[in-house]
Amino acid sequence: MKMTAPSRDSLKLELAAEILLRFSEFRFVAHGTSMLPSIYPGDCLTVKSFGSAVPHCGEIVLCHRAAEWRVHRIVAIGEHGPATLYILRGDALSEDDPPVRGGALLGRVTSVLRRGKPVNFDRTKGLCRRAVQSMVRHVGLTSALLLSWQAMRAGEILQAESLPAKLTAPGKGCN
Image (cartoon, rainbow, N blue to C red; front, side, top):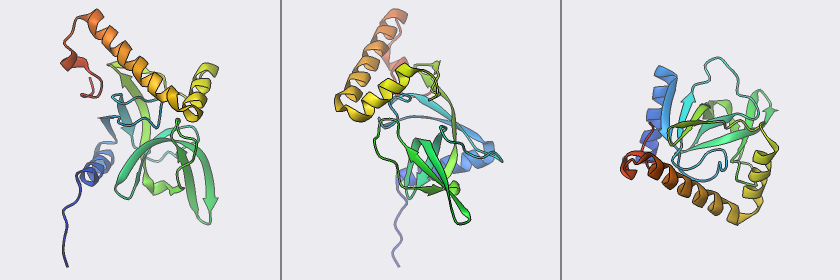
């Protein structure tokens, strides 16, 4: 029997799960665009374990499936026999993820920092946010425009504060 070394991503997932079990919270930098406009690449996310609480619709959660981990929103909860199934979807995606059992949900996102400042990522807030989410979901160019706008804003903030870009560039760490 040949043994293969675990992938780097699977080791990160195992470490994240262990940290949540031991300390109930951890932070990491988001990658990908599936949660635009709520979460941008480079945002610092804080994830807390559920403890004895039950996940609810509308919450953004960290989920693991096989060797992948994703941060998506719970859009539906259903029962399948004795098991509770959760349907997740990225805010920028038009299709739901396959259903997962509760054990696949590692924790809920409790805060988002963008360039060191807190972001209100609550889906229930504002007609404008829902309109932008719909545009991102259905108009492909919208994601590129949002990412360009965020990069431009990051550059303006760096110039205004006269800080070196290497210290505050999005995606380089959580401040």
